[in-house]
Each structure stands twice: as C-alpha cells, then as structure tokens.
Image 1 (tube, rainbow, N blue to C red):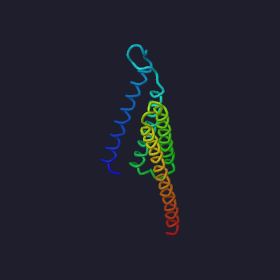
Image 2 (spheres, rainbow, N blue to C red):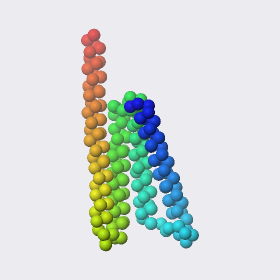
Image 3 (cartoon, rainbow, N blue to C red):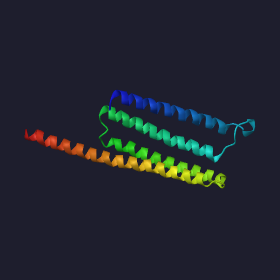
Image 4 (cartoon, rainbow, N blue to C red):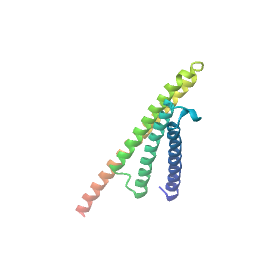
Length: 161
C-alpha cells in the first residue's frame, strides 16, 4: 500500500473518529442537562446512538492498527486476526444497534410501515458487510497459511543449499 493511500485513509479515519467523539460529547452534555432548559430529555434513541458511535469508533481504531500493519508489512500474521475479529464484532454490534433504532422508531411509523421495512433492510445490509469482512478474514487466513508454508519451504531449501 502506497504512502498516499495510507495517508488518505488515515486522514479519513481521523476525521470520522473526531466527528463521532464530538457528537458523542454533545449528546452526553445534552443527557446531563436539565430538560427544562430547552434540551431534549433522556431518550433511548440518544443512548442507542451513543452506543452505535462507540461500535464505529472501535472499528476505526482496529482499522488504523491494520493499516499500520500493512505499512510495516506485518499484516500477514496471526496478530492481524485479533483486529479483524474485533471489526467483525463491531459491525455486528452496529447492526444490532440499528435494529434497536428500527424497533424504537417502529411505533411512530404505523401509518407508513414501509419505513420500518426499509430500516430493517438497512440492518440486514449492515450484517452483510460483516459477512463480507468475514470472507476477507478467511482470505487473510489462507494468505497467512501460504506465507507460513513458504517460510518453511524456504528454510528447508536453505538447509539443502
């Protein structure tokens, strides 16, 4: 991966992480203030939104670590699996948070149930992203196995020579 690509990806990760932390800080501030001074009261939707942002932040940090491993040339190792597994877990958590938002929003959509169906479809799509990352994890496992096999063959060849 080139320096420009790594730099661009890291810039995007920093902007998204900073944005989610900023929004979370504002939401926590809104939760801590008295509802009578103009802010909205504590709602389950706010809490769920904060939890959803936490899952995104966890995934962002793991992706940062994976990009660092790519830059160092150590991504094809067993250490990468830990980060990929956490990313998969964070995506599944985000899907569960989205389904919770769908359930919380459903009573207000009785006149137009199509919105709830669309939101459910978005949740399924988020789970689909987790499945894609799982497939990529399997490809990483194959690459690590090939790398180990190649190292062993190189060691055997070195012994012969």
